[in-house]
Length: 185
Image 1 (cartoon, rainbow, N blue to C red):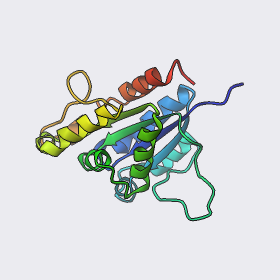
Image 2 (cartoon, helix red, strand yellow):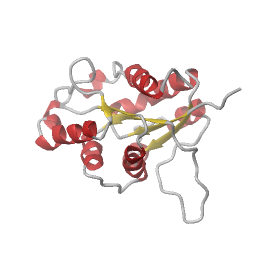
Image 3 (tube, helix red, strand yellow):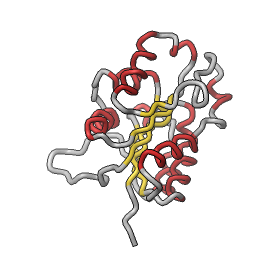
Image 4 (cartoon, rainbow, N blue to C red):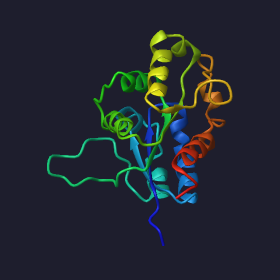
């Protein structure tokens, strides 16, 4: 029996994070060993159902750096999904700010050349800021598959994000990363 490939899922503090277990369950069903890393705001802010995500993945959700001398907590990833990705995280990631464990991992995986898929979630008001679109382009130039634009994910009008949480395209992110990583675990 072969060892399953490892999928790291990075979750930011946005509405769809409350339904992250959907992505975790789908990935596990597809044969991935799933490790979830949350931004501190996603975990501390109550955006995640941590118990459900941990039960589905079989691993603890991580959000902080390991201590000096502490063994690595998760196996290295074969692929990464960032979902939901916030405007704050896309902008920090694009300029190389690694001030959280999640952003540190993202900065590193780009340098390793791993398959990385990012699925945003922000409003048209945040999308209107020129830094946001520049950051998306920077990530694309680095080889990140940002599922942003027609046929993928598009920004919602301010104050309507809650109406889009249930239709957030988790499966699109998983299918895209699986296509990039090969035929499956």
